[in-house]
Image 1 (cartoon, rainbow, N blue to C red):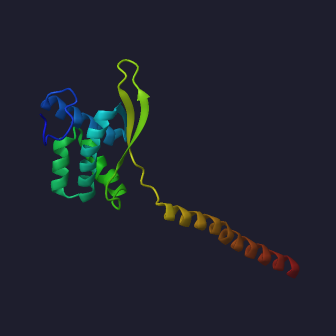
Image 2: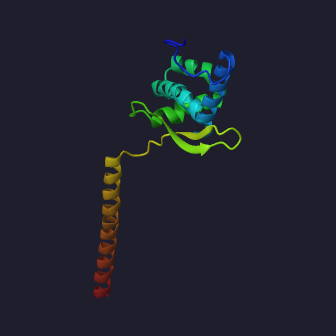
Image 3: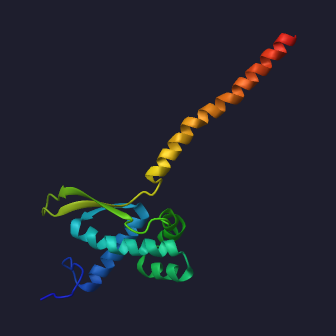
Length: 157
């Protein structure tokens, strides 16, 4: 019986499973999107969220903890310089799982797991749209003033 034993075994022993998760977490932070099976993606989501939370903290201890898991120093730098600050206001849920269907060989359910893009909140989008519509009006006003000034100089000549 598996009472109180959390996590999927994924058909591997513990060392193989840990190595696979380290490789997959490094890949998703490097490419920001990977294709894998549904069970692997659900386990991967836990580790990726933990790494991004470390990236948000940004201190030396967090960087050392991330270096223990991630396989590439360039990816560690990307995590702390680009990805962590991108999600600074988001309390969690940094990944999205999109179902693709079943793999041809063994009918395993395939998914895409990707980082959620944190560009603008819906309210911010409305504000940006309002600013964009107001911006051309401001640009046209100085052009008209210049045109009026040139008309007055022509009348004076």
